[in-house]
Image (cartoon, rainbow, N blue to C red):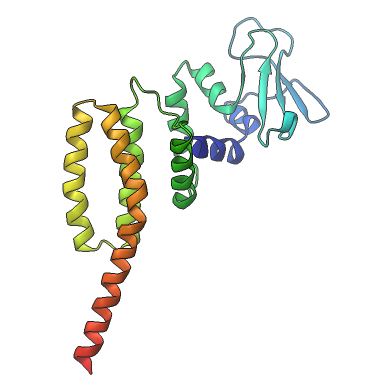
Length: 206
C-alpha cells in the first residue's frame, strides 16, 4: 500500500486538485499558498496553507488548516472535503496513476515481510481482491493470453472468490503473499514453454 500512496502523492498535487474545484489561493508567501478552508464553514481569513514539496523532508505537497486542524496529504484532503473514507479517497486517485507492477509487487512484499501490509483488517477484503486481480491480469497479458495460464487462473479465481465470499481475510492475505512469491516462477515456466515450442517447431521445419 505504501507504494500506491507514494505514487499518488508524487504524481498529483494539492494545488491542482483544488483548482479542479475552482478553489484558488487568497495569497502566497514564497512557495506557500494560503486558502480559505473549504473543509469547515465560516473561514473568513486564509487559515488553510499548502506547503511545497520538500517541506520537512517530504517529496510531495502537504497542507494544514490552523482553524480546523485538518491535514496533511492529498488523500486526507479528498477524504475531509467529500466526507468519504480514506480508502475511498485512495481508490479515487489510484485510477489516474501509472503503476509499475514490478515495483509495486516488490514494495508490497517488503511491507508484508516487515508486518506493514497496510490493510484494514476489518473491512478490506475488496482491496486485496483488487490487488490479486490486478497482479493476475497483468501476468496473463504479459504471457500473451497463453491458454495454459488462462486455464490455471480461471480455476485460481474461482477458489479466491470462495475465500472472499467467506470474508476470510487472513487466508486471502496468505493467498496474495503466495501469489506474489510465485508469479515470477510462472513467468519463468511460460518463457521456458515458449522456448521449447520454438525449438520443436524449428526441428519440424528442419
